[in-house]
Amino acid sequence: MVATAVGRYVGQIEECLQNATDQLMQWAKKDGMELNALKTKVMLFSDTVNKVSVKINDKVLDCVTSFKYLGVFLDKQMDFSLLVNYAALKAKRAMAKVGTLINGRKGSPIRIGIDLYKALVRPHLEYMVPVWASITDKQVDKLQSVQVQCLKTVVGAKAHSSSSAVEVITDILPFCFRRRELCCREYVRIITQDNSQELKQLLTLHSSCWTSFCPLEYIRVVSRQLDRAISGCQLIKPECIIPENYMDTKLTILPSSTLQNFAVSEVYQDIMSVAALIKVKQLA
Image 1 (tube, rainbow, N blue to C red):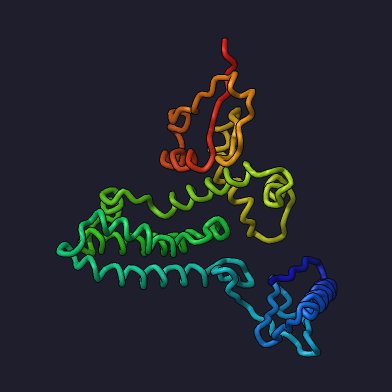
Image 2 (cartoon, rainbow, N blue to C red):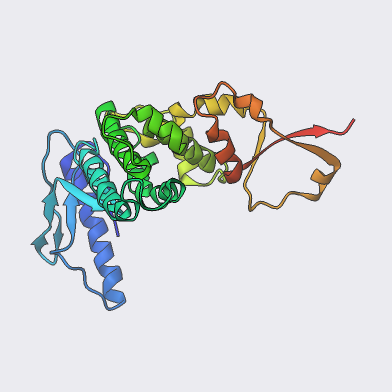
């Protein structure tokens, strides 16, 4: 469980966190549970202050500078450098296991190797990308380098082989384009939610932030071209039930030519599986 507090002053943050902790202790006590102070951590995102004092049963909780939450490493500066290193290491380890089945050009066929890469290796590089997509170009290049190394292992290419050629042969998008694709998917998923959803409300907010990191702002920026391409269309979630009066209208699937100028044409094909892009035209 996580308790969060936002404020301009350390005292205000400490008070909010302590109140939230006390409420959590009371809730746990009612159900016969007890919070472990040794396993509970406090993390402060600030450039000037290093720690705050929060207690559980008169024991001051440890204040850490980084923490792994739901598989994502969070740090004080929110630059996700620890996460990038962790993702690269996990992908290399996974590829080392897959590589035992490949053995250069003598093992499993290339197509099977590519499928294994997509299923077992690439998820480590892409886990929760919309959250940390605003990483620096240097960090993107590092993940891109890991992907190229893995693909060269799959196809049995030499170390000096062209990275672009390997990606074309394996039909794998460069990481920078793949990152944009996943952000666009997340953007479509958010805007198809109900207006009461918190993420959709935060996406539409236009407020300034004193830090340079803002995941939803980044998602909105990289999805501008997609947003212009689907303007005037109606987004319907696959699980939605189409009203009966829609049967009296002509439904036309938005042609792929609409996104010809989009940086990655495959984004449209993937979005079609997430939400139906339809254009409603009244019958003449």
